[in-house]
Each structure stands twice: as C-alpha cells, then as structure tokens.
Amino acid sequence: MLIITFVDEPYIPTITISNGTRQLNITAATIQLRETDNINLTCFSEGKPLPKYTWDSHNDKIQGRIRQFKNISREDAGNYTCYASNLMKRTFGDTEQGLNVSSLSLDMKYPSTLSSLEDISILEGSDLNVICRVQKGNPTEESVSWTRISDDKNWKNSQLIITNVSRADDTKYTCTLRSTIIPTIGDETLAIRSKTIHLNVFFSSEIKHFTVVKNKSSGTFIVNQTDEVSLECTAEANPASDLSIYNTRGKRISTVKNRNLLLYSITNASYENAGKYKCEGRNNYTKDKPSVSELTMIVKCSPRPSLDSIFPNKIAAAQYTNKTLNFVAYEYLDEENKTEFMWFHKNVAIERNDEKFEIFTIGLNSSLSVRNITQIDFGEYSVKVSNTLGEYIHHFMLQAEDKPDVPINLTYKSGSITESSVTLVWTPGFDGGFPQTFILLYQYHQEEKWNSVQVQDTNEQAMDYTLTGLLSSKVYNITMFSMNKKGNSSYTPNLQITTKINVKKAESQSSDYVGIIGGSISGVAAVMIVSILLAVFFLKRRNIRSSHRESPKPGVTAVSHVSSTYTDLDASRREINNYDEFNITYEHLNASTRKPNTYMELKNTNVPNTDTSDYVNIRI
Image (cartoon, rainbow, N blue to C red; front, side, top):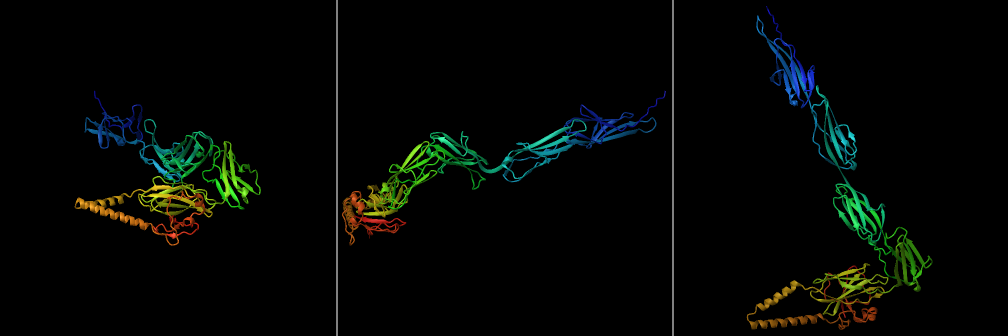
C-alpha cells in the first residue's frame, strides 16, 4: 500500500486575548489594555507538520504559543509578533521551512495624576488665578474641575479664577481629575484623583458685635445698681484681632491680643460704670483706622453731679449785674427724659421765669440766671435734681465780690523733700470773684528774713509748687496767703520741714578735720592745733552771722523777729494791713539770677501778674 502524506506551511496565526474571565479574537492592529491587569496572549495556527510558536517583542524571543502578563505595566506596551513555523520534509527533494506571522500593538491605558498644590494666602479685594496642573497619563478620556467645598460651586476647567476676593471666599477648594479607561477586554473604569487647598483671605479687623451678655437690646442697655454685668466684644479678622475695651472715661479696662473675642465683667455695677463704652479692634491690615463699636450702659441710680464739671459752693457777683448758676447732672443714671430740675432761692421754689429769674434746662444741664442783682438777691440758692430712683440737692451761695478765702490744707508731697527742694500742695480757697494769686512765704528757721514766691491760680482743685534753692539739713518755716484785687486772705497755719543732709559735703568736711588732727606731731601739739582751729572756726562763723544780719537800708525800719510764723500775728491786722505795718522789703528777681541778701522796697501795691514766679525776701 502506498501512503501519501501532504505537507503544508503554517497558516497565518490568529491571536486571542484573555483576562481569566473573557477571551477575544484579535482583529485590530492595536488593543488597549488597562495597566495592572493580568493578560494572556495566545497564538494559533495550522500546518503540516504542526507549527511551533515564537513570540518576539522588544528584541526578546519567547518560545511557546502563550505570552503571559501578570500585573501588566506601561513598560510592556509596544509591538508583539507571533511566529508560526514548521519543517516540511519531502520524500524527494530538500527540506523546506514553513513560516507565517501575525503582529499586534499593545496600548497601555493608565490615568493621569495631579501636580502638588499648596495653600494660598491673599488679601481681600485681590484677584485669584490658580491652575491645577496635570501630569499626563494615557487615559481614554479625562476632565479637570474645581469645587468650592463650602457651597459646591464648580469651575469646569483647570483654572480657579475669582475676581475681587472676599472673606466669604476663605474656605477649601478641591481640584478633581477624572480619567476614563476603556480597555479592549474588561470593564470601563473611572479613575479619580483630587487635591485640596485652603484659600486664606487676609482682611482688616471688623467689630461685629459689642453687647451686654444675656441682654437682647442693642446699642443702649439698662442695668440696675449692684448688678453683675458682662460685656462681650466679637470681631472678624484675619489674622485675629487685638481687641480693647475702653470705659466711659476713655481708659482701657481690658485687652486681648490675637483673639476675636473679648469678655469684660463688672461685678457690682454703680453710677461710675454708667456711660458709653467702646470696643476697638485692629490687626496688621487696619493701618491707622481701627474698627470701633460703641454701646451705652444706663445704671439706674439716683441723681448726682457730673464729674466733668466743677460746681463751686460760693459764687461772687457785683451788685446790678447778672449772674448764672449752672448745674450738670451725671449722665446715664436713668432713661432719657426721666430727670427733672427744680430751682430754689432761700428755700422758696422758683416756679416760672420773670424779670428777676430765668431757668433754662436742656437734657441734663440746667441753669438759673439772676438779673440786676441787688442786696436782697444775695444768699442761698439750690437746685433739686430728681429721677425715678431718687433726688439730689446742690447748694450755691451767691455773695458780693470780696477778697479771697485763705488757702486750705497746705502741706508737702510725700517723698518730695530733698537736700535743696520740696514740693508743696494745697487746695485753693474761694477766689472772691476775681483772679487770685498765691504768695508762698518761707524762711530758714534761724534767720529773720522771709522769701516769697508768687504762684498764679490755675483754677484747679489742687495746686502744687516746688521750692528750690534750699540749704541742706535745715529747718524751714512755710506759710502762704492769697490775694486778689479786693485784698488779701489770712495766712495759712505754719508748715515746718527739714531738708535732707548733703552726704557728700558732710563726708568732705569730716575728712578735712581728720587730716588736720592726723598731721599732729605729738599729743600736746595736736591738742594745741585743734584748739586753735576750733577757735578760728567759731570766730569765723560768728562773723558770718553778724554780717548776715546786715543793717536795714535807709528808710526801712528793722523790726525784731518775735515769731517764725505769720499765724501768731493778730488776724484782724493781718487781713487789713498786710505789709505797711511791718515795713516789709521785697525783691522781684528772675529765678536764674536771684542772689541772697539783695533787697528792693515793696510799695503798697498788688503783686504783679507775671508769667514767671517772683521771689521776695521779707525782713520782719
């Protein structure tokens, strides 16, 4: 029997792709694969004899019909060729190799990624433009968008653009990248990448609320006396505020730094707490214009005088002139229009305006004008101020113009005494209706002459003046009186002070004496020298005292010094004839050129009104 066998070269190979669950015959030249998938490529052909298979890619040949990929990556992309070959042996003739091939290209699909993004700080009112940059992958499709987290507002591109940025834009923003992967085999997938930033908007401090805690009112708050009151100041600011609360006197009573909330508590409310309060906020961007909010706190109390005005008990007036008495009540002690005024003359109510009296009241200020004053109009006036909590009565004494009252409470300021100076303080008395001048008199306790200094009244409730040029470690007597165009007041009680010792001078004198004694050759010689020195010392001191008590100038009568104070003089004589009685001598010298023991006769005239203090030496 003759058997004939045919040989044939391999057919063109077919390639299939499988992922473990599905298998497809490849007809396209390029197939899309998703990165990280597990893929098998299978090559199949027919021929006689049966072909053998070789996969060739990237110059790498692998024998076998199946090419396996585990966790395929983008490095595996490229062209792949399957070779199907056999050897055809003929009975007669040469052996011939049969060969056929199929090729395909692998396109690896993987998502794009986002570049890094950082938080952004910007000043309110500026424009914002931020780009979300993409590091390109190989997706089938992709899109980029921005979303504001606070309200889900969306920008459908890679640019985040906001013009005129406001504090409401201060929030987080997310850039989202969506990459769609559609592989040749397998399910479509969507890869999402996102990055979030915070937009930090800087703006100046702004007070949002300044209120009394647990009080629903706004602007004006009414509390009762002794209540516990808490003030709350809230601000908006970036960076955070430096907050301060100021009381009705403009004094800062509470402060906090780098915070947007400040609380201040008043434990026991009183009339002193009534008034306007201010909360002030500032940060790096407020510049010279801090944000300010005010509130008014009414503390319900009975009336009293305003602390911003002075209401003298005595008021002077000349006959046949007009005079106005004025009173201002303390603010914010009751609700508006709840305070009333009633004026009295010698306890008789002034019911209406007439030719003699005119009452004018506006708000918390009330005045009484007295016209064409005669003797009967002098005397006591009073004003009664009342509100829903009580009343207050203030008394005025209208009197004829006269010489001033004696100054009150002459003393020295604690700790002010030095080797050569002392600061004196006193309370001015009633000026008698005219500008008054204070005459300060002082003397070294062991001397007869008195020095004087002229001090103008500044209309303050308390006066002070510093005496300089005093000797160290000495006792000084000090007194004073006041004068105006009508005359002089009485003298104040005598004040006595002792200046401090000059330590350096005392040490120098001590060393001189020690040097003299230490230089003696023998005990006897030392005694003799010391005796001589002491005798010379005391003789010289006696001569100095004698020369210090110089004779009065011609025309000036010397009076023996009976007392070191003026208060021992008869009061009636002191008030009527202050200087003529004693033939007092004065000198008016500039403070910088004044020398001791220089005299000028003072005539019986008023002390001149000068801008600088005058010094007067008085010998009694």
